[in-house]
Length: 128
Image (cartoon, rainbow, N blue to C red; front, side, top):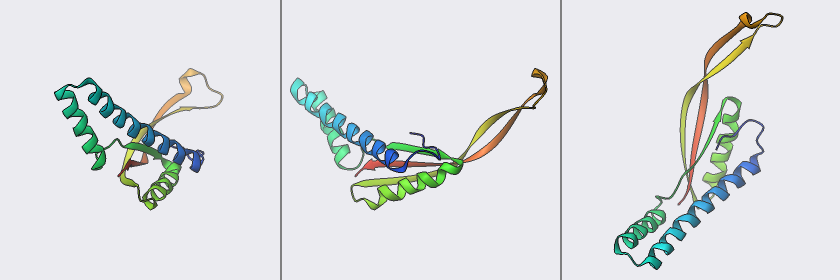
């Protein structure tokens, strides 16, 4: 999920929470479906998925922000870290951005392309 500098904080936090709840519901539903089928291999796979979810191996929701949005992504990471039921992972990096520069008053020949690096922050949130 990408967060911009204009994304409201609580909207982003609610979206992450909803995505995590949906992931948890999917894993529980998969375990229930496997039990109803009665197959040994399917039941073993479902039990392994339930054990992985209980031990913290559940799905991770990644929140990404670049440039000025890094501050908002960091605030989201701190908000989820303060809650006991979430585990948070941070990754930093940089990405390449391509800017098309058009000089005012010139034709198509006046276009230029500029490549630059932008700092990036990624936060992984999962249910413990």
